[in-house]
Length: 194
Image (cartoon, rainbow, N blue to C red; front, side):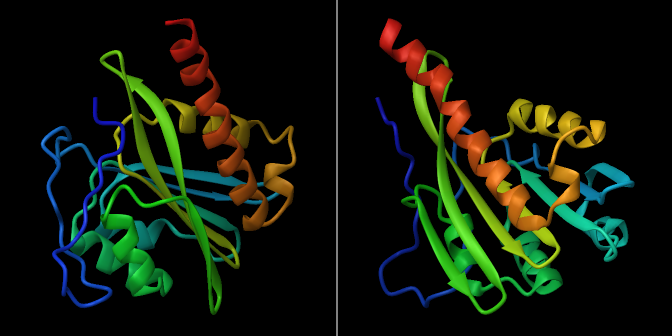
């Protein structure tokens, strides 16, 4: 049973190099990009868009959350990096799955990697979730295509009955980290029972 699916460059590759290492378990056509812009009284959803339409969906007067679910190609990462001035070493960690959980601080953003355990075909696998947090934005990458947990969060944002829409992007980072941790409990319980 392989729990961690580590993917990385060949030794000697220059730092910040974005090379896609295909995963035979993942369909590369299943990428999904959602953009949510929100504030206390307003929320806008752009769901299942392509990268070319991503920039037009961003409202700079609101908090922006770009959620990318599925396998990411280097060209998409470069475009996102240019759009939000994402650090190239962090982008390399996004594409190289199997990273250890960590927090890194760059000039104007925080980069976080966490691992979300899930059960697929009665096997526990660990999915990498990479999150960039800057002033007024969150960009999250989940290397798998199951976004059920995030749909629950979208519904919470829509209701405007909680704190998420009344605080900044740092609070959304907290909520996303809480979501990843909470998602692990059903997996742990299932594993303990079996």
